[in-house]
Image (cartoon, rainbow, N blue to C red; front, top):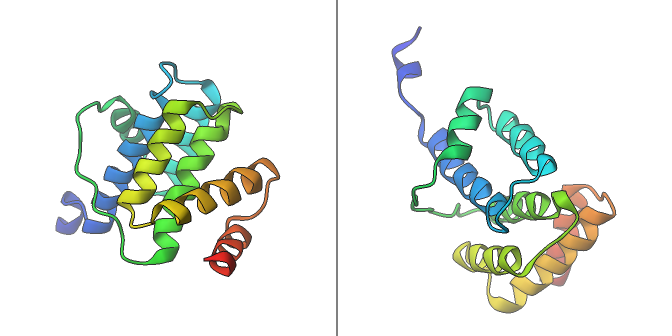
Length: 142
């Protein structure tokens, strides 16, 4: 094992913090749906986490400070992932809507951009559109 493997790289640490926020969304409505858990594991694996790491991060309930990325594409991706989690059970309740709006504003989107983003993503995800296509749509109306 390399010495560097003993330490988390800053990019991995950023992804862990973001993932904890994704897990928090699943608890927003008081129950964690099986589809939400499956999607969390899929996203966690995409981020390079092992299943035990994913399970540990899902169980983490303490608040962690989130620092949004600078790049628009990464910020868009974060909101996209949040919307995928929210819509995994087919329902977006008031708590989840409030969470995604708050998160988008913390990402640097203003209220109008946030509403446009939520509309594009909710329709696009329901219609199984590709994330890159949705990002293009968002950039065109921005």
